[in-house]
Image (cartoon, rainbow, N blue to C red):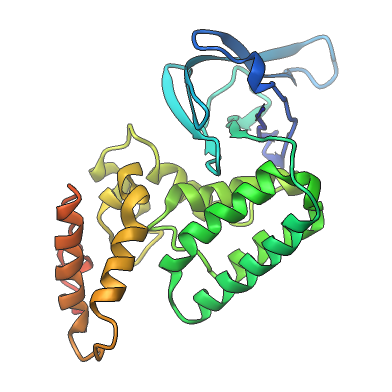
Length: 299
């Protein structure tokens, strides 16, 4: 099934509207169109008859066992059935009482699983927190995908409080690297938001990641608009889906290459050189932190 939720800001005060719409996958077909969300936005608070009715039609472009591609407001989106939550950008709406626009979330959700999934999630949680303590965030990428699959697709075996605790512990421990897996991190933020039916865990980071995964935002504009958020620049290629698909294998290759090697002064440059080569082998040209920040001295 697909679920969609939205958020808004009414009359200058935050007011989250987290309604959910479910559409059975069995009813989705390529070329079919659906209404993802409909709401009433009052223009005149004294007159309930003065409302704006919002509808967000989307068209299914492709549907397989693993992937759903659809078009919404002239933009194409891709959902991965196993773990990926996709959030749209913000849309303006014709209502002067609402000062911040709506955005929608879409995700696959099946209705299966049992109580054993709760135990499995707890084990993943402990392993991810241990990796975070040891500074090995790259090891958490497949674990995070597995956890999202359990929580999202097997909610029968996972109670809401367990899911909330998992996400909060991940954020508090900084157990994921948003510069290496922006879509996965945004999936965590989005699902946390959906579970709580309230504010995001980190509004600033959410905004940054929405910019990061926006395919229509140029590199120059991305660096300009996120410059105040981070003290160091990173290559925007890290925001691409191609990067996110291979970065775990690259980091695993580098971990094996440098296993047992002393981390001497200036080691980061040797590491980045090897990383550039590993990425180039996979068709990605990457600029290291030194290249992106030429006025900064790295040891």
